[in-house]
Amino acid sequence: MKKQVPLGADRRDAIADAAIHLVATRGLRGLTHRAVDAEAGLPPGSTSYYLRTRNALLTACVNRMLARDLSAAPTFDTAASPLELLIEMAISLARDRPDDLIARYELSLEASRQPELRTAIDEGGRQLRAVLAQILEVLGVPNPSEAAWPVAAMLDGLMYDRVAGVGVALSQQAFESGVRRSVTALLDGLRGGRSA
Image (cartoon, rainbow, N blue to C red; front, side, top):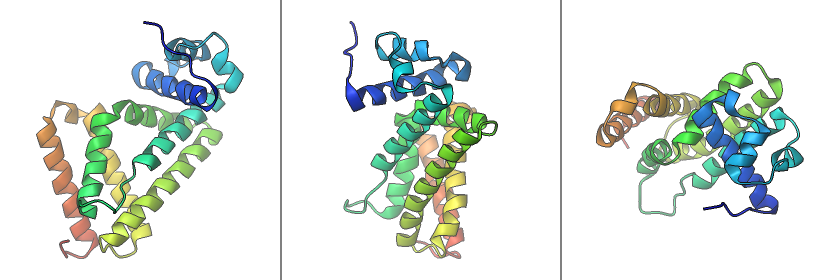
């Protein structure tokens, strides 16, 4: 079945989505403008029309993943506790968006050699840590902005291991239990041993 060709902003999103999938499944070597056109079901030349350079394409991937992360960020208008929201955020990202995680790790390594991409990744990280700091503040963690870095690093390590490390062999139940124990222990430590 032929893919429906998106238009306008939807086309830009389709390009970024296809590029993310290619980076996750083929690595950066498999990411070309032509491959993105084919993956997105777009006419040849569409990707290069919207994103002329490879750096523009890589940055579009970073920005698209950030937009998805921010739209999926937990809100406090639900019945779940902030701790449960934080735990579920990590679990659902590893479960539902493994392509985004794998692509993020590939792009992070590439950014060590490309300052423009490093800037986009750093800015995205700052925005996500600001959201995380809000959650930590509600959870009673002192200095939540400072604490957001180690919490983000731990969550990132758990998710990385789930999609690219030995954690892929864990059952979903074992992964969820490990995330729950790790996040709870870290937050208890950051609060000086006070449980939520």
